[in-house]
Amino acid sequence: MATYYQPLIGKILTISNAEMRVRINLAFAYQLAALKGWDDGIYTHISASVPDEAGAYLIINLDYALMK
Image (cartoon, rainbow, N blue to C red):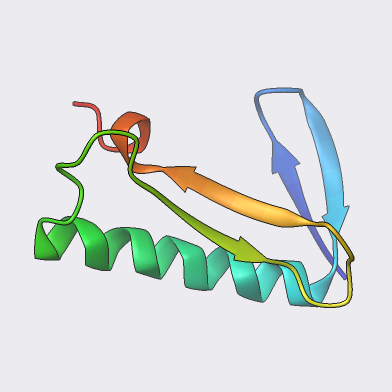
């Protein structure tokens, strides 16, 4: 299990190691998409499912994530 502070809600959250790996991989995919210029579409997103957690998905919306 991993714990981290979530400043938006002011709490310390605990997540599984599998979810932490997916979050790291999703962040890498986000950076790769930006480097390749794949972030210029409308409603572009990257999503991933969390292993061992039925129905759990993480989504990065590139339109909002890359706003400057």
